[in-house]
Image 1 (cartoon, one colour):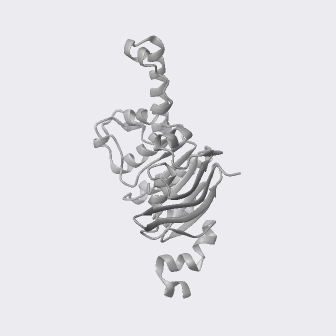
Image 2: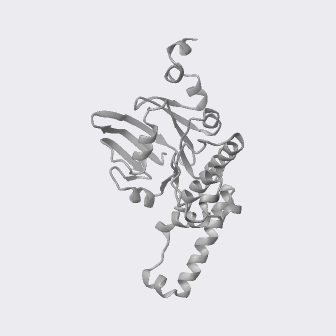
Length: 256
């Protein structure tokens, strides 16, 4: 059974095929990585999977619902959230406030109740704050709850984006290079966090250049090259595939 079905997905920019007929399935609770050399189409594919780009062809079916061509907020409402390679943080807010923003789609707060500050509204707000604090604790940055985001270290900001994605009650989280720019200790924390997400039933699609991280956390890997799916399989199958070695290192390395 697949949670996400990607069928013949394609995206063209002025005649250039950035993603070209890519198909794969993602099982619930798995860590599904997408790798490939620079320019392979990885981030373009993620942008298709959360509605930032509209596909030129193909279908995206999530949990039985066809989301092809839907707006990004429709993907979010369906249960797909993401982080970004370049941080998309509200730096003028605290860490807690950033996480609260992530949960706005599921907050039930009628305008009249908010304006009049009715007791039910206040109780709901307290509940949202408790949930946001729990998410900060889950990703390991609860000590920054009241800190302004612009005062937080880079590695903590990476985990803050993941907490905000989880606040959207996402069943599928798209992680775009979560270890980029991190030191070994911070990368190890991301590794552990991804494993805990999967163990907790959250499905992860990971785009990452750190191959040690990818090979350590992935249940399944899709390899892209020039926008096309080159191959897919387990970490062991992918790392030993001559086509993957050639795409990364060249034909001579593959022959060797």
